[in-house]
Length: 299
Ligand SMILES: NC(=O)c1ccc[n+]([C@@H]2O[C@H](COP(=O)([O-])OP(=O)(O)OC[C@H]3O[C@@H](n4cnc5c(N)ncnc54)[C@H](OP(=O)(O)O)[C@@H]3O)[C@@H](O)[C@H]2O)c1
Image (cartoon, rainbow, N blue to C red):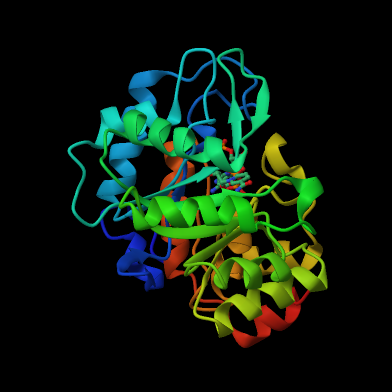
C-alpha cells in the first residue's frame, strides 16, 4: 500500500458513473466539517481556515465526489458554505451530492419537508453552494418511514429534475421496496445507506441488488460503524485487527477498503475533519484485500 501523499490519488480504487457523471470511488463526506471531534451538530465549531485547507487537500488528492447537506451546520459553520468558499469556482469534474427531506430551522431544530417544501430545500442548497443546478440529490427518508411510500416526495424531486434544477436523483436510508417504487417514477443513480462490515445480512443483500441494477451504493458510517454520529467505532474484531496488522494499515482503513471490495458500484464517502485521516482514507484505494483477507473478514 502506498504511504506517500505525493503519490496517492482517489482514483486508485477506480471510478463509477452516476448518470453521466464519472466519480472516483473514494469521495468525501462533509458532515464532520462543521464541528470539532464531536458528534454531529455538537461540540465547538470547527476552525474555518483548517477546514478550507482540508477541502482543498481532498481535491488535491483526487477526490471529486463530495457528500453534503444544507442541514450540516453548527452555530458558526455551514458545510455548504465551507465547500463553496474552498472550492468555487468548481472544477468541471467535481460532483457534489446533497440530500433533502430533513431540514433544520435556524435554531438547529429538525423538521421534515412535505413534497411541496422540497423545492425550497433544493434552492437552499443551490444558494449555499453557489450553483444553478445540483449534480445529485438524495431523498433522505426518516428512519421510522422506510416502509412507507416515497411516491409523493420522489415525484416532487423528479419534477425538479425535469425543470433542470437537479441532474440526478438518489435515495438515502431507504429500502428495496422504496427503491423499486422510486425507479418507476424517475431514474435513481445511487442509494446512500448506513453500511459497514458489521451490518446485518439484509443490508449486504440490498447492496448486491443495487449493483445488479447498475445503481451506486454509497455507505455512510463505514468507519464509524456502531459508533454512528458519535464517531469511529473501536469495536474491531480480532480478524479485522489481524488483517490491519498484515497490511500495516489502521482498522479504519480496513473497514473502508472492505466496503470498496463489496462491488465496483460501492462509493466511499468517509467523513473526517483530520487531514491525516483524509490522507489515510484516500490511500485506502490502493489497499487490495486478498481472498484470504476477505474470508477472514466475512461477516
Ligand atoms: N444519508 C445519511 O443519512 C447520512 C448519515 C450520516 C452520514 N452521512 C454522510 O456520510 C459521511 C460518512 O459518515 P460519517 O462521517 O458519519 O462516518 P464515517 O466516515 O464512517 O466515520 C467518521 C468517523 O471516523 C473518524 N475517521 C475518519 N477517518 C478515519 C481514519 N482514517 N482513522 C480513524 N478515524 C477516522 C472520524 O473522526 P475524525 O474527524 O477524527 O477523523 C469520524 O469520527 C458523512 O460525512 C456524511 O456526508 C449521510
